[in-house]
Length: 68
Image (cartoon, rainbow, N blue to C red):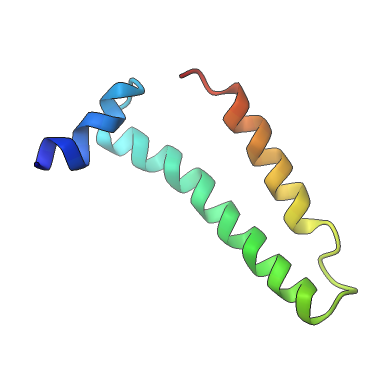
């Protein structure tokens, strides 16, 4: 069970647990920022007009360029 939950997926993409954790966090933290920017934009439409979209587009390019 431990192996399935923590090691199998990182190994399937050629990474150790900590390498995979770092890669996942490098997507999660900017996504959190994009969500906060979208929330701010929802409340005050004049702020963060392109921030969330810019972050998501950048992350999408990174994800598409990753080797599987």
